[in-house]
Image 1 (tube, rainbow over the protein chains, first blue to last red):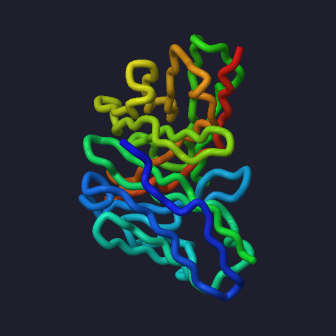
Image 2: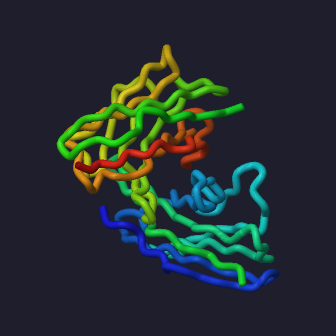
Length: 110
Length: 122
């Protein structure tokens, strides 16, 4: 299983919106609506922010939203805040009881 | 409070073995699938292994298959990862992760431990 493809970095100014893409294949992202997204601040454990493509866990801001088209999933973060600066990872079920993560995207809030 | 606490990490020589533990509390451990996910220094997350609720079914990433064994003791609310024939490329923080699909139907990694570091070096 090859890692899902994410941009290495994205940036935005406070109040703006950004989108992080996550590209897989027809064997993972394209076959299942089972993409999740995780936020990781430096030195901390990852935190679930989106699951099953577009669902938000309890307590997660509605500024986070997820979507999918074909083999590409996307995370959109609106109304950027300084505390959103972190690394973001996508993850997809890859079939045959395996999972695959993206390489991660560093979000910088300018 | 729902909590996962890993232990057992530490420096190990190439070719050596190590067993990681993950103590679960604050939830009914026996009804959840569990996973191990690792992160090499400065790198991304990588899924390592998964175990079902009663331990009868397991799966592994190709990179660790045949060397790592995941197991659980539901009486002790503890998840394990036995690692053998360790290589430098296994150096990483290892996270214990909860999967709620059998409890709530949700497909996600919803609770993460703080991680335990395993450096493999001579």
